[in-house]
Image (cartoon, rainbow, N blue to C red; front, side, top):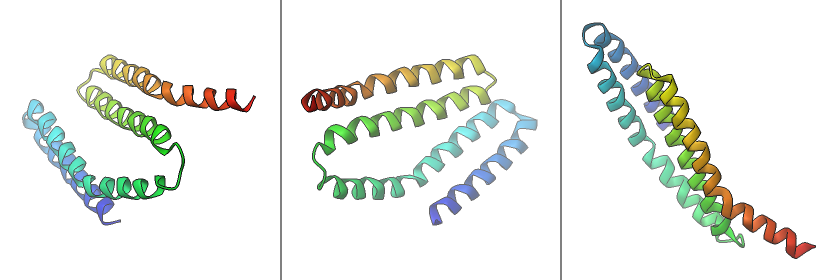
Length: 128
């Protein structure tokens, strides 16, 4: 809860600062926006650390946990990075580049998930 409040407050402050700077120097406004985004991502480190610690504890009880979790975490990370990058491109007025980043992210997610699909088909083959 505290992290969400901090992130929200920092985002609103960053957005207002960007709006003020954008009138005088639009090129600096994008740098402020990027710096604010980095600060927001730093706020997420503690909650993400807690999530990883919880997941490690949970997977100790699940067979094939590493084979299942690794592709899911990788795909989630790729999707988040691609989405953030695409939004930055769109904020800069480059919608076509944003679309290409999202397409590349989708392809990378599919590639990362292939071992999981292989494992599922292996399990189905063993059941038949």
